[in-house]
Image (tube, rainbow over all chains, first blue to last red; front, side, top):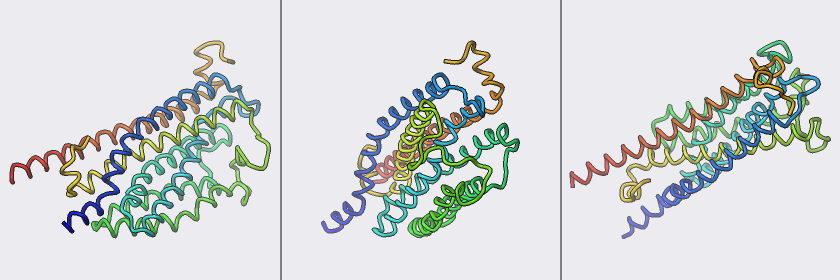
Length: 247
Length: 59
């Protein structure tokens, strides 16, 4: 009896989280698709051509949301890592583990689309500018967290070690964000600022916001998809996974 | 809307060669991520059901 209760307590979180995540995914996916379709419509058909950069500026509608998500997801990953370390909660580590690949993907996309914007705007695919360099370091940080987790066989040690690495690396996020202010960089300043009036036309701003919301909801959906995979793979010997019909 | 024809839209004022790869690669990456996750989930489920089935036979 005692072992039964212990077992139930031990597995309760992934057990309840797995079906909950499954129910949430379609909602996030639907909102994401609606936002992305609306954002692309606004970005390509409503927003006017920029008087300085011509139509090359339209890359902003993927570049800025991807760059925001790359930083935001890192902070969320570090947050789950901190909760995991503080509470010794396996589901928190699983969330951190599930976020890393999507964060890395958006970091790559921010760099890739940035290169395709930099070439026509600056005349170079890449410059060793503070903003670009710190974003490239962010990609290596994501890779480091994932590789460290994959390289340690003992899952509890892998969870803790990669969580510590993720937490230490969070210091780079404000460096990326403020790099355009702290250093005299080639990269343009923030597109949106809390303190200053928007530098863009309202339709451009709206399209960028809707695209960012779409990327955000997409990230939520794929993170939950991945955490469900991780739960099944890691808890496959747990009784609830064995007993329940997994859908 | 400022586009008079499909060709004009695709040309993106001469920047089509930069704009379309940016959006195309982003779309491909996002679709690819969803597809590999669906495959990974299906594989995890199959492996589980097989292990449950073999455990059932053994006992």
